[in-house]
Length: 253
Image 1: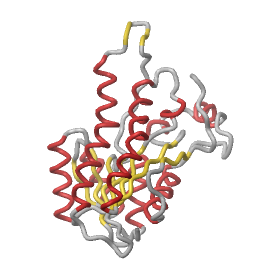
Image 2: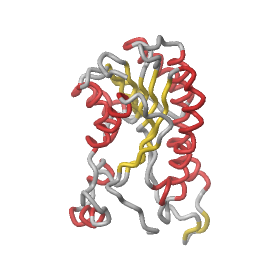
Image 3: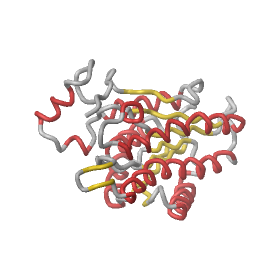
Image 4: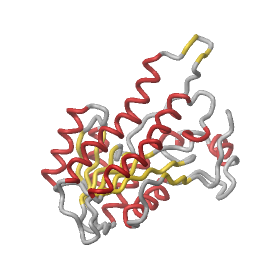
């Protein structure tokens, strides 16, 4: 799919991987709507890169529908959805205080997995009504998984499960939407220099980097964004989950 003049939605687009992706899409000529719970930060990021900001709770049906309609009123039906909204968390299944609170598990699943599914189903329905391009393509959906889905560490049960769900969702969605010319893929990032890790000391960052074979450093949000753009432009990538991790394989803890 040619990026010029297409309409895109990036969830979690106010910062981190989402902000870099939104910026790269705008630079490539796309019209972009940044969806984020943090309205003020979304507006700041949107103003800086030439996008529009829309407040959205991706795991809430009404909020997502309202946000998609707002974006459609400005840019038309979205041809591209990039799911970057997500939260982390590190809690043992059974810790010193007893079993993990079920609400902690549910919260991460709701935002990361249900939120991605919610946006996928709503945007796919819109894409089906759009006109196909010369290749018969109507849309591209890319969700963010994680290497934790493959090698989840102790304390990552909820996070790994949420990202594993995204991986398992990719192929059946790609198969279902194929008849409509909609491709579905996912990216599984390793250790990236996002706002969560930027607050760490240099010593801590170097310690994390030491586990990465090559290049021996944390990934950058721009590198994630470059992969998103390639997956949109390469029409033959469909139903795939691509790791971007410098050959990292996470240890147990």
